[in-house]
Amino acid sequence: MSTVGSVFGTGFRSLLKREILRFVRRPRNTFLPPAITNILYFSVFGVILGGRIREIQGFDYILFILPGLVVLGAVSNAFENSSFSIFHGRWNEYIHEVLTSPLSYTSQVFAYVAAAALRGIVVGFIIVGVGLVFVPFAIDGGSVPVTRPLYLVAFMVIITTLFASFGVMGGLWAHDFDYLTVLNQFILRPLTFFGGVFYSLDILPPLYRTLSLLNPMVYMVNGVRFGFLGYSDVDPNASLVVLTTLTFVVLGVDAYLFKRGYGIIE
Image 1 (cartoon, one colour):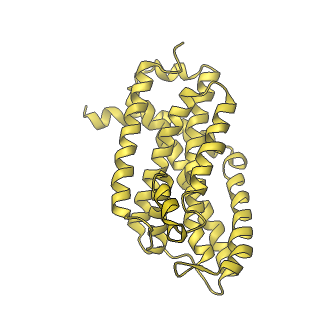
Image 2: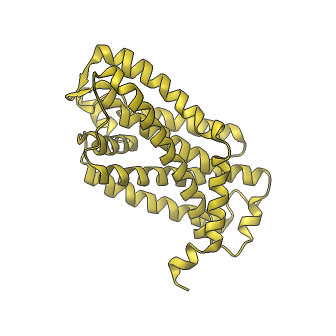
Image 3: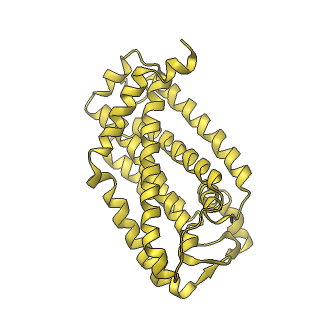
């Protein structure tokens, strides 16, 4: 059996299916909240505030913030899915069934990460759908452009996979459910909001623009924005290379932590 076949074999597909069904069967808990949240974002920032700001970098404000809102929803849900699934499995001790199965540690990690990344991408589509409703209200006859579809797909896959991988770390590290809330609400979301979701880096003073470049969310938001609008404050090619490399590194760390039994074996 090939290496790829051993990693993505029947066991992997079974665990992946279980993890996907876990959130698909509860749409009111997984898909409805981000839809409602982004209805509020688009109403307040896109329509009301956007009516005063008008344009940023030549784009209508609601179109400029849409990619950032997609990133915010996608990475938050990818992180939340894998972190909660891992932690819940530890809390109720059914993750041991996975660990004692014939699956390799790499297959286990990939299954958790792939399911979480898929949830993030689906949520991203939902946010785009909400945007499609609001854009014509804010822009007479406006529509949501996708000028670089390959870049958009690449960045969405990479950023959701990256944060699903971080979620595995968070799920292994967390000692109770409050830890997961702290990670998502007080670290992930602030970084996203200061990552250029609602503004362009070019409007910042030089010092703050330089400091913003230390925030990895800047490259994710601008990468997705480049996919939609063809505009980015940073080089999208360099961003994609760095984020892809970081994703593989984090996946490797996840597999290592599983192998060591970190957070699972007391």
